[in-house]
Image 1 (cartoon, rainbow, N blue to C red):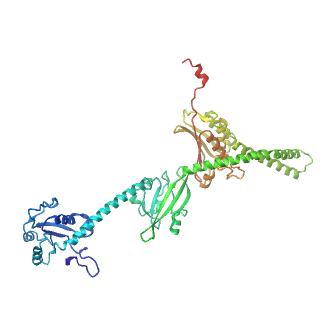
Image 2 (image 1 turned 135 degrees about the vertical axis):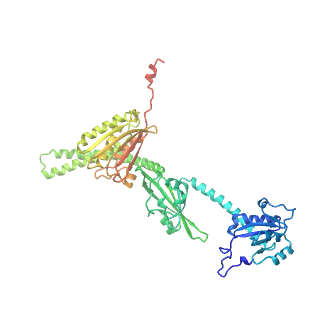
Length: 507
């Protein structure tokens, strides 16, 4: 066993200093199968140097050889085996005969090491440890595969990061959406793999608002709500979670970050919030109609009477004119509020959306056509009529076009395109204006929110209300400097036979 002694530096002698062992086995029986497993099983390469079975001797006929060594040379005595195989440098005695073991110790040259049946107990113990380890590793691999399968089926994006923000692992959702194999993402910064659902970039650096930073400092779970604009200009809402992962010593070693797309849920919540706001606005508008409008009419009437008086000088007339204009402005605001909360015509009839779009474009072209604005309509053939009120839908288009024109002070094109998608009629109004920021997109449909100096913030909310009461929906897509697209999704009108026509049908 001198070959297995440790050097002064504590490095095992066989590590890189000895070639493979050519083994000659003396004896047979159950122990031979253990030796074969030790020699040929790759699991033992972690514990033992490379071995190769050269020959077997002293194998009685009563002990048949295992299948793994049926082609191995077998000799009656170990002397014959050693004479025939001078390359043997390790003899393993498994006969259990002390006399044979003693003779081997006396006769073997210094170049051949010996392990007898008494010393072999240590290799047997090592064998059992390796088998147990193999079983544990198999079980661990199974559990790891199961956990990985579960994580891969989660729709959210999951990143396992080190404390520098570099990727240690990701689930399948991440690498498939990124279009990069999992192995190529390992070690990369997390923002290299993070994507929105349409595949566009989530961020181009380790975002300061990411809860990763807070978890790194606090050692606790953190979360944050962020917004992103996808490749189509649609606003997306994400909730980000960061979870600390600790090692056996209780030290934080990794951080798991999860991206959850909550866009649909947020839209539902905003819709419910808007309904609550509409109810409050309705109560306020009713109060204003009863309590403010009558005094407002009185003030406006007296102001108009004073304005017609010849006794006023120029300065006084200017002041009275301001009173008249402000009362008109207040009355217009009150009217808009009442119109906003008052039920619209809803699904009152069938509307030819192509004709309504052309009427709206023609109407706006009269006032803006000579100011550098081109308003056009592009429509697919044979589009069905939609449910709704023609005047209300026309007013929606006019207001949207007006917003587009105001976003292009230097002139530009406004295109109304009409197509079919998923059984619905789609009306898209696209401009080349200044576009909208994430904050503006987020608040665009909030009542009384406006970016205009004289706006009342009821234009888009009223459009949304009219379209939704017609059974449709409204979405905004925009990027700063890239224009805005308003999409109206409208339900086709049902082709219901009129009762009088059915009665007159002779069939």
